[in-house]
Amino acid sequence: MSLWRNAVWVVAAVTAVLYSAMNTFVKTDSQHEHVQEVMGRVRAAQIEIQVTPLNTSIVDHLRGKLSTWRDNWTALLVLEETNQKQIASHWERMKDDMLANVAAKNNELTQLRESERELMQHLHEWRALQHEIEVTTADIASIQADIVRQRNENAALRRDAIARGQAAVSRQADMDEFRRILTDEATTARDAATFHRRVLTSIAVAGGILSFGAVMITLRARWRTPPPASRRQ
Image 1 (cartoon, rainbow, N blue to C red):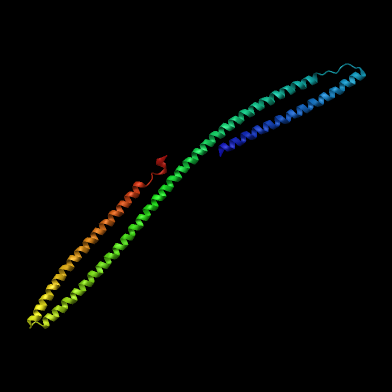
Image 2 (tube, helix red, strand yellow):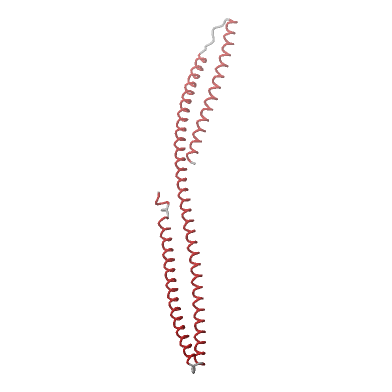
């Protein structure tokens, strides 16, 4: 803004000087023409009355002033041309600076948009990971509910087998059935234990994968974060 203000002041000053010089020049020409007209009338009167010619030194003085004013006018024109060239050169430099600033701002805007796109991509990846975590959590809750239900069923079977075994202890067939039920119960317990170990292993693996994914996303966001504006400058 200071450059524009200085340029405006220079143009205004030059305009005022040129206007004053032109006004003075016009007035001088008008006075000179008036004096010439008066002197012409005086000479005509002298010829008619045959008197001594009037002293015309004032006309020569005015002519000298007119020549001086014309020289000053020419100097003002040269000064105006010089000022115009300086103003044009200054404006050209200022225009180049403005274009360079605009290009720099466009580059910063492009980098900002690229950072925004990367941030949105990270946010999308995090939402996808969060959805996977929610799905895995729901699966784990379902598996835990199945384990509880299986335990309850096994306990009910165990109680039923014991009750039937105690009621039929006097009969060998019932004893055989009781042994078979106990064997099945043991097998079921082993299967349940194996299933429980597998579930716990799956939970541990899923937790490790989720933790590794969260760490990788965080590291990736830090790696791709653009340096601050102060460092770029």
